Image (cartoon, rainbow, N blue to C red; front, side, top):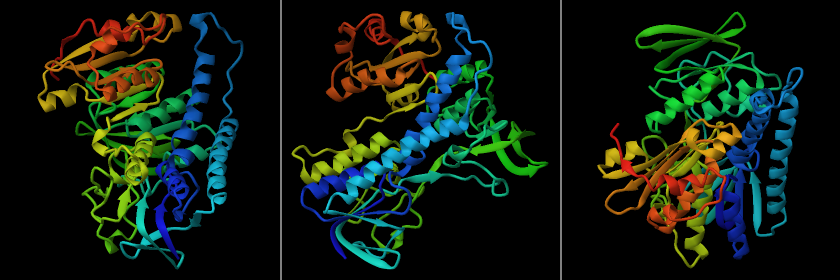
Length: 457
């Protein structure tokens, strides 16, 4: 069973690459051990953002009195209905992929787990498949810390299958996944406690943003316990008891459910890569070069498994990079990419490029344009004044180094900065632009008229 190319995994990069290869006359095998669509479609972006939308509707319904909107009686949250809506959206996406594969004579979908037996061969359910090129797109999975094996824990995957709202949800981890689910289930009606071992939430962000999010969560009655190293979890009287070391003192938290949101690991350890020339780094990610080629010249790694970005948009860009070298005129590179992402809490946090921590570490002279959401007219009019906007400018070149926004709509207007960075424009191209009033975006030019030296952290 010989193919021109084999793709392992149907996450964001895999199907797009299969379609492109097929349209160029290549015979492609695409292998999937689980539901079509990978993390994003099944347990990531698609289902969680559907839940986030429902949670926001519940929050607005319960918290609009100050804007003159009053509701008589209780607002009811029906998790079964929310789940049913989510399942339909996920199912539609899967069916779209299924139709694409089965209606293309150059693509063969192979269901089962793939394992390498050489650089050019993989085995699935006893059958051997061979190709000149193999593309790995296997994604990642939740990391399960030690000390939780004796309890019925939830992950970002299994929590989406609940049909009843937890009475008290304890979340281990104050990163993006933990914060999104924490706020979401708090708005559904759960008591929520977030335990994080760091000194701030979202440890890769600048301290003022972690602090601001903690304050927002406090307003929403979400308990955040920082400097809390989880030691052990055990079942006790039908509940779950979590033992935590907090500044050398042991504390215990008891809840009805526990969600482990302590990071993710790549799905690379059981691929049989020891039978290839593919090298992994110390964390298990596949090493790749600027064209996403591994240390085996005919094998490429795309998406979360290569450690070059754990997002749907970076996985799709991985496809674009590989595809450009196969069929495109402009050859794209991994090093062309600016890191950008968002945490879809409410209000969202969005980020591109460097922040103050990165700039200080790199020893770059920089200035910052900053504005609190409380001083933006549109935010006041919407009644959504939490957060702040920071844009970082290199002092010597006037180039935009990056930006971090926390505020209503931040996940959308961050693209104003992203586009300028890709265009290679100086900050004054935004500063001198005329934006529409009344919007949050109109304050970006105004901010850039008042640059200040960047303080050290």
